[in-house]
Length: 97
Image (tube, rainbow, N blue to C red; front, side, top):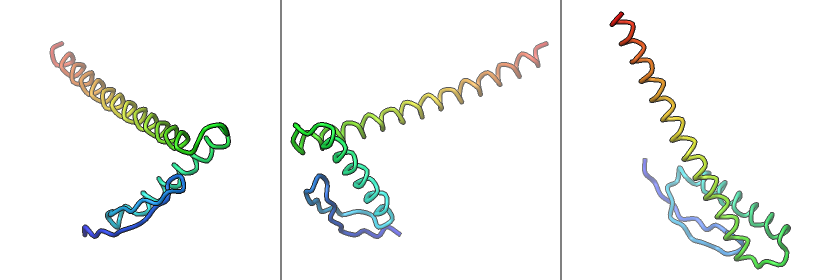
């Protein structure tokens, strides 16, 4: 089931038409809401900045958060591999005694 649909989202007050997979609509709308909420926070905090600056900062914040998650996921995967190798070494040492 790979149905697609067209939606229009507003980011920073500007409309963007998207062609998306139907099953991703909720995720996209939630993401757009989070971006707009962050834009609004930046606009309140940095009143002297224009909307484009606030949009850029909101998207930079989201990108940094994504990179942190990717790094944490990679580190978790590495830790699991180390645990697996440690277990194999322990097992090998038990069998050589």
